[in-house]
Image (cartoon, helix red, strand yellow):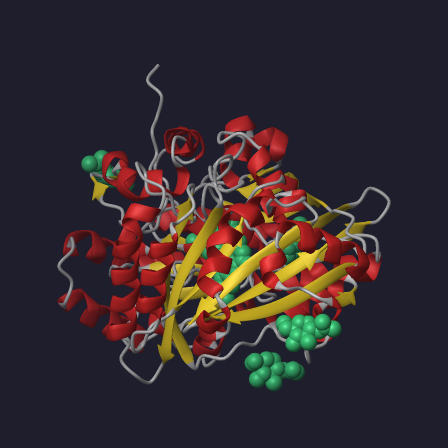
Length: 517
Ligand SMILES: Cc1cc2nc3c(=O)[nH]c(=O)nc-3n(C[C@H](O)[C@H](O)[C@H](O)COP(=O)(O)OP(=O)(O)OC[C@H]3O[C@@H](n4cnc5c(N)ncnc54)[C@H](O)[C@@H]3O)c2cc1C
Ligand SMILES: *[C@@H]1O[C@H](CO)[C@@H](O)[C@H](O)[C@H]1NC(C)=O
Ligand SMILES: *[C@@H]1O[C@H](CO)[C@@H](O)[C@H](O)[C@H]1NC(C)=O
Ligand SMILES: *[C@@H]1O[C@H](CO)[C@@H](O)[C@H](O)[C@H]1NC(C)=O
Ligand SMILES: *[C@@H]1O[C@H](CO)[C@@H](O)[C@H](O)[C@H]1NC(C)=O
């Protein structure tokens, strides 16, 4: 009963089509009955279940997206096999209840568990489907979408110390969302992004069918590798190619304004994307300090002369080098030097800090006076930080159309602008800082379209408008071309093939275009 009351309250304040909403409310009972008939009850959590809130919050990473007024799902389904996912889709279609699918819950706008608009929806939370099966001899792994990067990295390293997976840095990220949007980390210059190493996938489509690469067809298999989460169906599992990193050498070297960081960064922009592919140096900039964080696929003895010839400004010496195995580098870079390899299996994260972020791509080095101004903005009260990731090498070697992820040749680096604040405080100055910083950067970054990374989702870039029964293609171009450039139209046609009725939809899902006969 409580659930119906809170939904009715939301309804009162809704400016949106209350007609559609009433229809959905009436159909929610039928939906729940349909689920109960097909799925064991212990895998279903309605709002009145004592476990509903703990499960819903379990993989929320950003308290900004989880407040008392956040629109919550009618029910959470935690499938343990494909048939439960198929049943949820079939029940949802029949009773007009949409689905949000969640793997790791790291979506920057929380679209895997909340809706911006009042809506009746179910969350399919894949956290019980997270097995990782490594085929050592073939150098591949089959990974269920609910696995975290940490779980994948751990399983791969247990199976063989000669294998690794090229993906992002944060161990609690879910495979499902990560591979849907691209996925890049310290191995991107040598081995490309995570999507560049996907060999096959299993998708539950809007008809409730289970499709592999062959059955889904070329366009849909292309689309799910970087075309953003949710749009094409629910990806249950992925087969990926593993890569062979030898031992690695890590370093972290901070440089402040007083130590000449502005000149060093100005130089870094042209050096880092052109280094040998074995050497990756990213930069985290906060206050008046930039920390250069690196992974080199070789020994310190080999690294030092390389740095001396390409980037002597950093002053790297023996004492900065930390030689380790690839798996040790995972906690080292993201959790700090005291973290252990087992710590990357910890799925719990703190809900103390809220964040807001957005991203840009840079094709031409920013002039020195630009960096001077950037450091002035970073010195403001409540300023955020920058995470700058060099491209070049393998990730740039693919054509823009090879995958939906179009940020390839010509890209020097990706920048993420991020700000954070205590969840108990108001973040409006921090949010405004991100907005102002993004506006300031306009002249220095890619243009027409101004590119952005879909895995750093930002609803300020634009949200969908539904016209009639489907998402408007025209309105979606505003944000869609930023994420996908010229691939956006092909994505819309792929969506039109697999989900012409636009069942899988969210605030930034791909709108369907259907080719005229
Ligand atoms: C702290 C932090 C660090 C990060 N570091 C990196 C990094 O180093 N490199 C990088 O590339 N990215 C990074 N990201 C971004 C990250 O890759 C994306 O947020 C990614 O989409 C998260 O995946 P998820 O499964 O955890 O998210 P979720 O919130 O579960 O899902 C994200 C989106 O994908 C959809 N989705 C989820 N699972 C599926 C599925 N199985 N089938 C279809 N759609 C699905 C969801 O509905 C949602 O729209 C980082 C994010 C955070 C919060
Ligand atoms: C999925 O789980 C159900 C129990 O909920 C079981 O009856 C069914 O056989 C399982 N299906 C597969 C393919 O394992
Ligand atoms: C290495 O460089 C640091 C500065 O980054 C310096 O403090 C240290 O003395 C140097 N060590 C050697 C052995 O040169
Ligand atoms: C897991 O991480 C959380 C949040 O950082 C921390 O509070 C907790 O102690 C960790 N658990 C273990 C077993 O290390
Ligand atoms: C939308 O779909 C419903 C049924 O799902 C149908 O009754 C209605 O006519 C459709 N509206 C439009 C504008 O296509």
